[in-house]
Length: 346
Image (cartoon, rainbow, N blue to C red; front, side):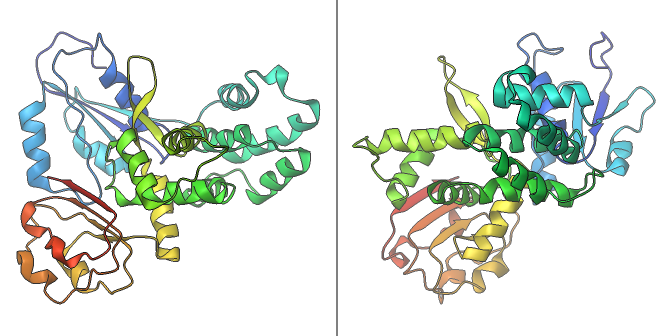
């Protein structure tokens, strides 16, 4: 669709259910070393995007090919208004591809699957309904645990009945993967909610933040940084976070959180009062003195009164403060009495 010699603008919209791999497909095309164009840009559009910043990013970085991804058919149609544009509708994986993905991640091949687990595996796969995110998440959980047949049956039963996959079904799989985490990994995963949607998180800095928070304990005399690295790798292996950058040795240096996983994380954080996100001026006035971790995610077009908004707010209990945005919204650091972690992104 993209690879022709015409110089006019062309749009390809990839549309499909959440978790089908739309952004993954677009990113693979973007990352190809011998891509269809020399100049390229990857511009994420979050739920709290601003049109001005989006347009500026597009105008400053694009060439003549645009790939969009969306779950909404009307958005895809609106983007592809010209006859030479394309709409690529993503479909679930075939049964064969689903089985290959599932068994290769757990046993390296379907033939290596124990006989007593084959029927259960087929039932679990049927409930995933060909959704790549669901298959990757559930297989990542199964591969990371030493589970017997009874455990597999429990996981199968926890997924409910029916094969007509929905957003609720995807959330159930993600929630099940979270519940099966050991407590220390749950805490580390929840901490990722401090970052904005689609933010590329640097692994080393994240590990240092976990250490400063006291999430990492020495295991068998190991250095805490090595333990933190093992926690990070475990979350990657379970497919709960997505690699976003690698070094020359193939080690993950950056990660991202899928938007559906991030929604689950923020839901769990709200239940446990784990962290608080301020994404608008009104949210500042609702802060109470129980805030332990504070993430300030204001945009340039959010009208704030700068320091005045923080005048009557108590931040004395905040242990971690991260801010993403302009300097004028950052509260005076003198308001923080027991701060352990400070990250400022401008």
